[in-house]
Length: 277
Image 1 (cartoon, rainbow, N blue to C red):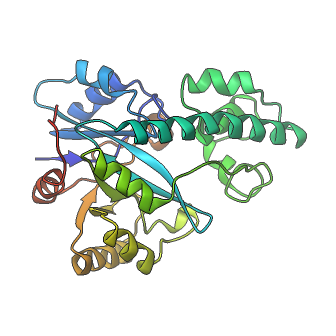
Image 2: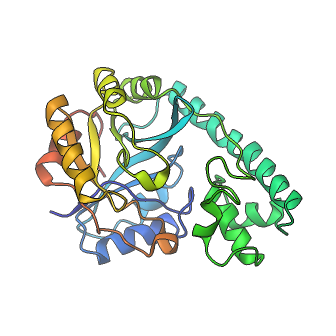
């Protein structure tokens, strides 16, 4: 079995509709795909209705959290859906994305970038994220590629036009997911390219709070990071997973480039309640 437990659609900051993500997942030879859009389960119905024969959908999302002023992402696998409290928190996060997006657009305009909120909203179509602003900047001719937006000159963390947003305490996020019958994996914890590596003691603390696993196989993890995370997961009794973190054309349509071992997948799903699709 080929299992990819991290992907995004146009329901958040991917470029392709959920149905197209499902089609591409099967074309990439996957047997299982998790749709993990940022802070939303909105794409799952479309994905479920478009499932090709032979492909299993795992419903989930990538939750926004913050630890010591740093961004932390949590892959929440929720076969039974979100509880009312978790759904309310996700709604707050999504609403604050709008405030943040508008504020970043205003800062960009102050810096001379001819980008409008209307352009960003049209690109997003739903939940707004920094990749949508980056794509608007490309369309306006401010930069040549979306990746250029995520540096100190523009909307990278601490950049001239960067604005922080509401996010959950990670331990509370883990608790809310577990109360919803789900399981949580810490996303790309060793990706230096994202600004920092999450400290081992912080990961141990989350393991004590109910974290189920670590995402080890990720495109942003080099070999030393993977080896370190595997050893840490073994010490803490955590599942090790893998996923492409595909965002469609933004990441080069890379579904299936990183995968999860079947035994690890079964161990993770054993910690959840509710059906798989």
